[in-house]
Length: 136
Image 1 (cartoon, rainbow, N blue to C red):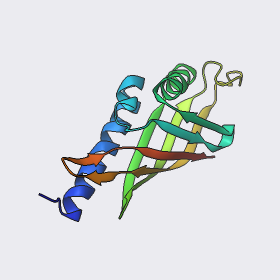
Image 2 (cartoon, rainbow, N blue to C red):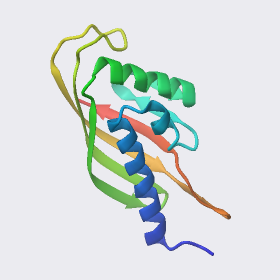
Image 3 (tube, rainbow, N blue to C red):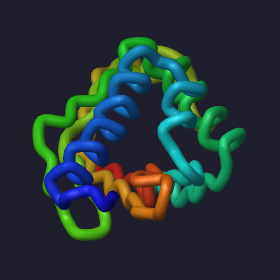
């Protein structure tokens, strides 16, 4: 039985919410588990992270460098091929991260994440974060 577009949108959004909840628990493996094919593109660093291990290692570094890291996603835009989550990240840079010495300053970054999800027979939703764009 095919899912309605409203049902697909609800399922996609629930996966993105699970992703954000795992980020806020600082649970890298929980974040990775929300992906079909883990991939982050972090524009300010010029980094493209493909695969569970690179994504989990990146997140571990974020959670260590910013011990109070939090993701805030107040709005979603639903599209035919996925969902766009707009929000911001916050945290205090207390430890070195990605070769950047700790500053002790609070950090706020706007984000736009595109979650692409494909509909397949017998597998109504396959989550996959196509990219994560972070800008300051």
